[in-house]
Length: 92
Image 1 (cartoon, rainbow, N blue to C red):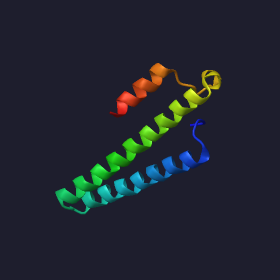
Image 2 (cartoon, rainbow, N blue to C red):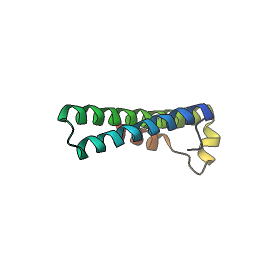
Image 3 (spheres, rainbow, N blue to C red):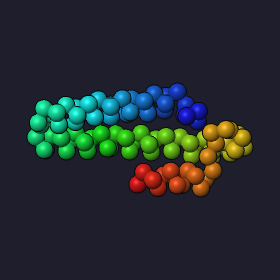
Image 4 (cartoon, rainbow, N blue to C red):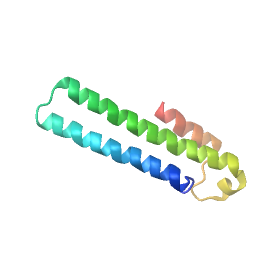
């Protein structure tokens, strides 16, 4: 993910780490026979955190493509508008 500035990348990593912690809580709740309400609430939090991280990654890539389209085209990780749209829709 070369297109994200350091601050954006740090925020994305924080979201992903938070999701990992929440997923661990879901696994522990299931293993220990936690209540359905608690498991679903934690699972919902994991899903939201992952979705937000995904949208932040796509948003960063879109910003990169708009700010410097020539560099984006030459970047080996560069994504076309069609690819970005497809990725965005896969999250919705």
